[in-house]
Image: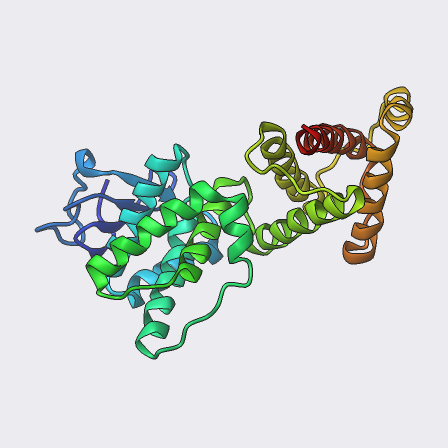
Length: 284
């Protein structure tokens, strides 16, 4: 493959046999190279095809405007996140995170710090991502000489979470986080309990709610319902089911959309598990 454009020593633009533009990343990939030279494929560490014209334009503009040391820093952060989280993040994170960190660095130099209104929820529901984001702040401080507060780690963690999910959308991710918080609050108030946040069932319901919120907001919930199972769950777990109906009323009011009955079944089961365990825990 031929180098079409060099952005810095570690990032170049090329094309595949179908004519698609591809961004290649790798340490020293463009060292002592010029446009028109052959690409040293042994040095390629990351690649992604710029099929979406909008994303392609945004990324190429970023590569042209953002200093190369910031681009290298983002690559280090993404590499670290993929290793520590054991996931393959969406290539789009190179656009969103590069843009975010670039302007965060600029704002810091101007003494403009933006508080993160969901910092508590991010720490609580996305602990692994937040821990890695804190390590990213250490990298930023070491290489850029700027020490960011935990609020910024929260923002970076959101980028990780968003990129872990298929068809990630930052607005959906943020709304889903507030939904999980609000639903847990409804359950807690409905039963008058405090959760044992160290329990397996609590972690299960949090995970279930995270995926439920994503499906709900993307209109991916299934409408088919097992009528017999739906009626059985109502009679077997009446309080948990009533709690789910209250959650449904809340979402109709705030999101203008009800919970499908198929989702109500599994949500009721998770509520019953965590509430039953919490009540047993508090009585023992």
